[in-house]
Amino acid sequence: MSEPQSDTLTLRDAFRKADFSGKLALAFASWFYTGLMPWAPGTFGTLMAVPLILALNHLGEFYEGLALLLLVPTAIWASSLCERHLGRSDPPEVVIDEVAGFLLTFFLLPLSWLTLCLGFFLFRFFDIAKPFPIGWLEKRVRGGTGVVLDDLLAGVYANLSLRLLMLWIS
Image 1: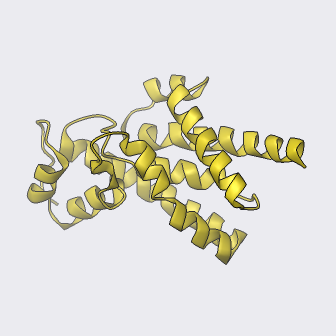
Image 2: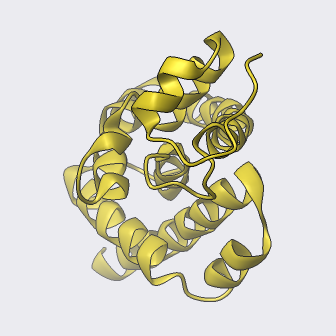
């Protein structure tokens, strides 16, 4: 594995200097370069998770759960490696945490265009507003775990809020 960079780098520079596993982590953590959007990379990363959510919903609950079980530790690994390669903590280019949190937003919920839109806004609200304990965790848990954990909790808040909204609407 190539030695992580100690100075701050752009994703493109870090990608050029990284070995294969570093390149893989950078590509995955940026959700295949969605994180390079010049503004609101987290929002774009969330939007680019929609095809995955639609596919998993079509496959069923087992595959939704399996995807989360595989995605979360992989996201933590990729986020940790990206922080080391980029020389920054929780870099905005890393959007795999948004993908994981957005997947959790719809876990074990029926999917429709209405729930997809509501879930998107709820997830982004909780991810940005960071109500307790999301903001508290973000400040205290470091590394890839901290990068991913606050978004997972935002996904839990969005999932529970979406369930309440669906009960209220029906």
